[in-house]
Amino acid sequence: MSTNPSAGASRIAVLIPCLNEESTVAAVVAGFHASLPSAEIYVFDNNSSDGTVAKARTAGARVAQEPRRGKGHVVQSMFRTVDADVYLLVDGDCTYPAEAAPTLLEPILQGRADMVIGSRLHPSSVSEFDTLNRWGNRFFVWLSRLWFGIRLNDVLSGYRAFTRDIVSSVTITSGGFQVETELTIRTARRGYRVIEVPVCQRARPHGSRSKLRPFRDGLAILGLMWALYRQGRDD
Ligand SMILES: Nc1nc2c(ncn2[C@@H]2O[C@H](COP(=O)(O)OP(=O)(O)O)[C@@H](O)[C@H]2O)c(=O)[nH]1
Ligand SMILES: [Mg+2]
Image 1 (cartoon, helix red, strand yellow):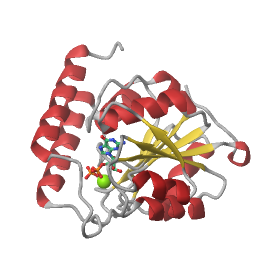
Image 2: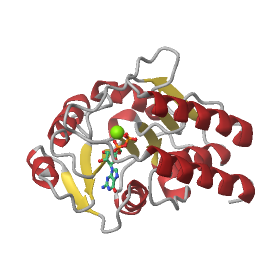
Image 3: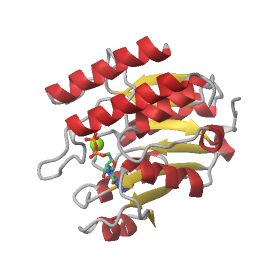
Image 4: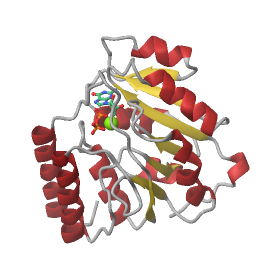
C-alpha cells in the first residue's frame, strides 16, 4: 500500500493549479525552486485571461493547459499526465509557505506516511481565515469525523504531499473545489496513512481574488460527502 522512495533518488513534482494568478505565481514558483531545488514545478492553467502563463514560464515552471474549467478538472489532469515519485500540491496565490515544503515531504520520503496535509487549523497553526471560511472548514472537519471516522484538523487544505501510489490508485471525479475533500476521504478510506503537519496560511495579497464561492462550493462539498457516504467503502 505504501511506497518508500529513498529521499535522494525521488523525483518530486510541485503541482500548482492557477487561474488568473499573475500577481503571485512567479513568487510561488521562485519560493518552491528555493525550498526544493531538485523538484520539477508545474503550473496547470485554465486559459487565464491575465499574464499567469508568461509569468509562470519566466519563473521557470512547466506550464500545462487544461480545457475544462475548475480546480478538480485540473487536478485530474495533473494525476493523468505528471510522472514523479512524490507530489506536492499547492495554490498559486502565495498563501501557503514554500519554506514548509521539506516538512511536508519528509514523512513520505522516510516511508512514514502516504499523504501529508499542511493543516491550517492545527492547534499550533496561525492562519488568516475569514470567519465564514473558518467555520466552514470546522463544519467539514466535524462531518468527516462523523461520516468517515477521519480524525484530521483540516480536510480542505490545498497544500499537501502524496505518493505516486496515491496518484495511480485514487480516483478523482470532482471538477471543482470538492477535490481536496474527495482526495482526503478516498485516500483515508483506502487505508493509506494520512497525517498532518501545521502550516500557517497568509491572506491573499491585496488585489488578488479567491476563486472560491463559499456557498455554492460549500454545498458542492456537502453533496460530494453525502455521495461518498451513501456509496460506502467499496470503491
Ligand atoms: N487552473 C485552474 N486553477 C484554479 C481554478 N480554480 C481555482 N484554481 C486555482 O486553485 C488554487 C486554489 O484556489 P483559490 O481561489 O486560492 O481557493 P481558496 O484557497 O479556497 O481561496 C489557486 O491557485 C487558484 O488559482 C480553475 O478553474 N482552474
Ligand atoms: Mg488559495
